[in-house]
Amino acid sequence: MFVNPDTLASLQIIQTESHPNSHMQGPTSSGAKESLSVYGLFHHLARTPQGKQRLRQMFLRPCLDLTTIEERLNTIAVLLRPENDTCLQKLARSLAKIKDIRTLVVHLQKGVSSNHGKRNGARKGVWASILNFTFHVLKVLESIHELVDGRSLAITQKMLTEIQPMHIDYIGKMVTGTVDFERSAEQHRTVVLQGLDRKLDDMKRTYDGMDDLLTKVASRLASELPEWAAQYVENCIFFPQLGFLTVVALDPATGAGKYEGEGTENDVWERSFVSNDMGYYKNRRMKEMDNQFGDMYSEICGKLKKPGLRSLPRC
Image (cartoon, rainbow, N blue to C red; front, top):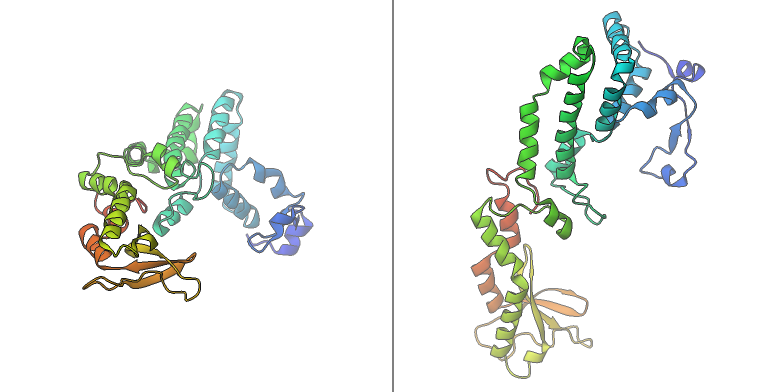
């Protein structure tokens, strides 16, 4: 059934008004909230984002199929029976914990795995949400099995037929068996559990010990330079994709590095970039480090794309 906007407004089926919160009126928001309407009486009962959207569609495009209408009425009648009150409450609580799985999948495809920069970002990120999804879907199925006369409903039959508990449970176990949620929360990024891949563990241990390695390399490099130049080498650093670089203080008057390889044989110091009055140089020693260790960060992330860990977008 098609219902034009004038009819919807006259019957107050759907009616919006300007949101009183100014923060909800920005360019990223519709700037409106549901006013007193028929839909407004029911939308707060929908527990999931996709449920709210589906409910709105039902009000905008009312169903004309008598069989579907009767199925909905039978479902409401069964859920409102006093003996099903406990099950209904459990269903509502579980549904409220289920996020839109399509959005989560889109985030995974983009490589977004956590709410970076936010408190408890890892615990509320994509992997935690998928884990919650699997847990509460199973709780929903459990509640459906407990419903009195629940199996007589078309919607419950559809759910019990199409949702495979073993598959849902397997997905949950894959996540808990792969993601280290405790360390992910500490490091504000997705961390894979140790013991899944020996080579990956070795690469991560080397990467975690990078600070000590760079300190030793900087000390050794300084010892090889002319005595007057050693004081200008601040330290050595590693950047993903850029590799290893030597940090040298800049001369404010000229903008050049206070040392740029003078007095060394067969070694060219190439400045990669400048930041905060420091120059970042690629020299022979740094190139040797690049050849020996490579881009460890990218290799770790690339390792996660191989079979067994291919679903993890971040390291």
